[in-house]
Length: 411
Image 1 (cartoon, rainbow, N blue to C red):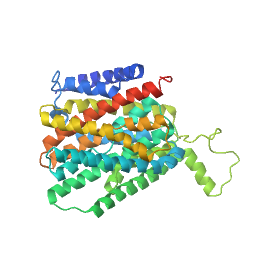
Image 2 (image 1 turned 135 degrees about the vertical axis):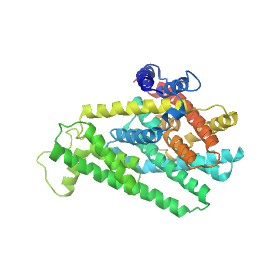
Image 3 (image 1 turned 90 degrees about the vertical axis):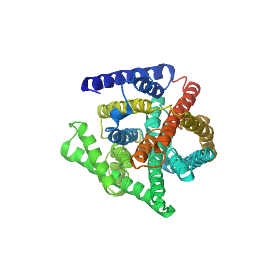
Image 4 (image 1 turned 135 degrees about the horizontal axis):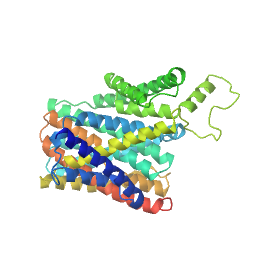
């Protein structure tokens, strides 16, 4: 594509993104579905303006930044109290859903005649819900802080788990070696390093903002520091996207963290440092800055789901059948998480059962599989993309009815 064509496509995509979001607010028809349809129309099943090869060079960087920024932006909806309170519940839900989904998908692929190593690879790649779908959808649905924290953390953690487990399976397929201890150690290392650097990076940046730079700075400089946090975390063996999540949580809750730190050090305050209504999550960032982040998140989300539509390939009927079948299975097993969350209300359990769409992690892993020459990588990619499409379709449909039933009066 030439430069003018690229600018025209981006312009059309962004205008359509705003239109899709407006339609969602008015009709409850999820905007992500409309964005995928636009991708199909721009790609080989419509106007044939954009081919996967046209975006192949920029795709790895684009996908990585999208995942990082959506997690960072999602952190601004997590207050400190709900984070600490729901962290344990989120881990419980995360492991339960991830292991169950991985097992079901792998078993289904085995029944379709796919080898166990490749089946497990795909199972791991698709075991977790998509942060690119979950976080924007939670913001649009305006759910409780409790559910926002649980589902945001689940989507963030499972994105990492999908990548770690799937890459380990690629090593097994290529080298023929396997170590459960190595997998466990890798996961612990990724989360520990990411959490530590994300928190320390957040503390350092709050100090720089308040003591050196002041508040009258460009918002982009914080994004620049976010990228530094990502690079340092990845270099030290952690997961940069998770570090971005913790970095955002520290920025969002900086005043309360400062008050708690002074209290722990025995410093007495004449006036409380926490908001007079004792609400958690007062940020050093301004409302305008958070709105700026929302705009970038909207831009990345819009391009990502259009990109998914461009990548979709229905030329292999067998891949379509496998992907659609696995999506149906995931839709039916997702409510099983209600077993371990009896304390949730009916509405919250319905929301959790409805949030099972896949996205960034699966697409990214399959690109790596192609690059590394994994057997049947092209066929597996077709399965994964069809699976992503149908899980988004099914999850969006369930969320449509959830919104009508539980948020109808608010809408």
